[in-house]
Image 1 (cartoon, one colour):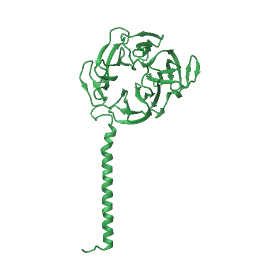
Image 2 (cartoon, rainbow, N blue to C red):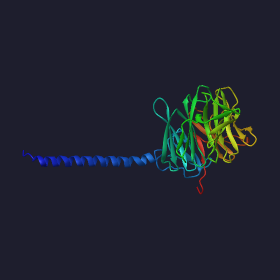
Image 3 (spheres, one colour):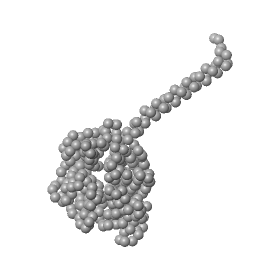
Image 4 (spheres, rainbow, N blue to C red):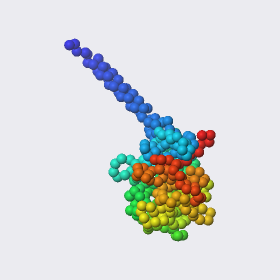
Length: 334
């Protein structure tokens, strides 16, 4: 067989290498192009968005966010796979438990089309999620140890993200706390269940320390928090910023310790709601007069979403069978 001259052999090798490199680069660019939309819409199938009025929630059957139109309307699926979900303004927050040990939570910040804007990973199990009315502030709580508020053997970590500045508070325990009029320090302080006022400055949350829970009012600009009253957990501020729905411990029975109440911030008067069952949830205001919340299903498989009037009248009503993390969205014209 005739041997090619060395210069020609060298040229052929160089050409082959360049072709292979070009093909590899083309594959990488193609792969990145193919994966980018997938990452941008990692929270859903691309067809589902928070762009219509309705009740959004986590569907127990699929683990994904769905929408229901009206009290008994059709259900539309295809949203993000989340353990906890909330949305307001132009932003949504999706909490996911990551696989592996120790437990970790992935907080996905999304736009209305459920395209990823930012992700934060924190230790623990997803527990509470809230977005301020403007969409500028987000907060989430994860169980660092334990998985229930019904026992004392738990610890939480609550984070706060300001999308206006990009500033992330990894643990709200850093915020100076005033309890009984005195600056308070203790190693067992836990924050959870944040809810934001419409001014994007004031917030409310639960603080637990030395076996007691407190409703606290926080001031982001002043970087401070003060306790308002005892025995108030998982607050949820009404759309007019005048009332707070919360769960109050009314029994030492770990299977049924709480009752839903509403607190009037003007005179700190509290009233029990018509829901007599124990609710372990951060209730959501479906409108100015109605609260939504999750309760375990009778068969023990997942939760159902119920509603009840916020003034103590009426009776509980089943809203969604097989759902949790309810949040009502009102879109102009939609």
